[in-house]
Image (cartoon, rainbow, N blue to C red):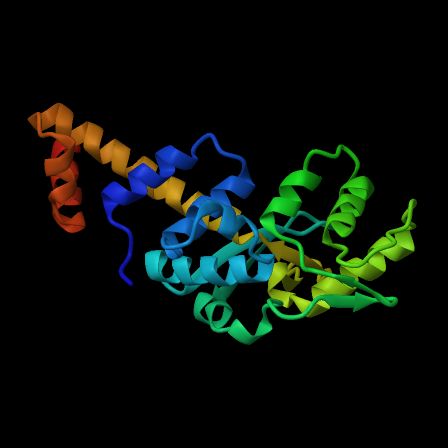
Length: 235
């Protein structure tokens, strides 16, 4: 597969601009798996979704992921690098197999559709309850879930599908505080799509204003040549 073109990037950004993050994730997933329907992708376990998004990110922007997080203790900026090829190569670590057994009951793994339903809850615990309720595949769900039961199910799901949440262990270079930060692949990839689209729009505006060229003609230029023209226009 090749990277997405400039025109595809602009069209993708325009389609996803006003969408919820979960829907953006499905939109991006559709770029990587174009033969699958939206409904089918919404039912993918989160680990499978993240695996495909890691592959999409690697082919669109390269394998090196650079990000940062603020230290919770002193506020220092903690930078980290991640090789996207390592993420994309974890095919055996997605939980696409049998249901997860926890305390004698069975649960399928959460999907984007489950997260969308849980997002309607205003309380974090009730959102978690909604997910475990939806994922229970045998009869006899309790009328009232305890925090311990919900936590046990969540831990079981995390073990079965470690790619569902990508967690980085970081050490602050200033104060030495150790922390764990989750990498949201949807948010990370979308921020890169948006940055590229906004740069393209600025270039389109500059060249169209200066030369009267149509969008299609400008986008047909190589990236290097287009930037040289922009530099000339801006002096």
